[in-house]
Image (cartoon, rainbow, N blue to C red):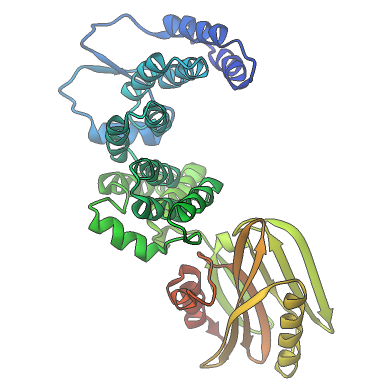
Length: 422
């Protein structure tokens, strides 16, 4: 029986050399080439060798590939070896060999979108913009993660930026940010603002969709990939021990589609007040740079300054009477203003058996205007306090767009779904 080659140590050593500013790129490359020679079978040249890194790649491949063609699937991630060999040539500024090995990586695993992006970037450095655009468009059909979507729109944004279609580039960068936020987007939008002699503009999601549809640019992931992901998820539900895989699939589907049926939620229940409701589990992920609180009586009010838009605080407050609410509300306003926050918008809404006060609070932090929704619920004359990030940043000029904010809509759904036990 042929012994399986332990490749990970060799691969790790090569990557360490490649990532080093003074690495021996030729040595790293030779290690990977020797490794490829050891594990690559000698087969009919007309037979394609595919390699995959996970079961999702493999399943999507089976759904797409023309079975009439001859192929085998390697037990080793060959595409990774090709990709890192390409990076050794990239470090040496040998663009032809870089492109050659990136294409080998893509042939080995078409779902290796990292190689597509690197290939597009290589064409960009050579100003081969037609080839850059062709590579980005080809990549689209293999997308199945939020990171893939972000990379697709940002790299397409780079293409339109280089062709001086700044408005469309602005929209593409903004839409990439919908799927995964990056500092690169803010940087490019700032540059576009300078080019057009106007302030930085983040286009709203709805505006992006309208502009991209008019430009005949896809705004959703490939439908066939979504269908297959959902099939995999349903099958995984029949196998209890596949919990981690199922949870990962659910997360992938939600981040691609924003379909609440695939969003993890958590139940908030207060037995003393006898109410229960559910919120997105992501609202419980705290990322703090500073944590402050002001306290009066039984009521503890938390104010968070956080990195980027990762702002979250959720506390169920104990035995706080409605009669003190206005005093606490004023305290919160005074406190946030003293910390250089700007309260852009506030609203009181009454519903059956339930009141709430909503404030949109912004602060300039880390070169970005942070916007959070602070909501005070009054249920049975007691108070619940939830603070969550908005999906966008709002000011006096665009405050009307807040009504389309996904998290504000979720707050509204929560209000409508709170179960009060009499």
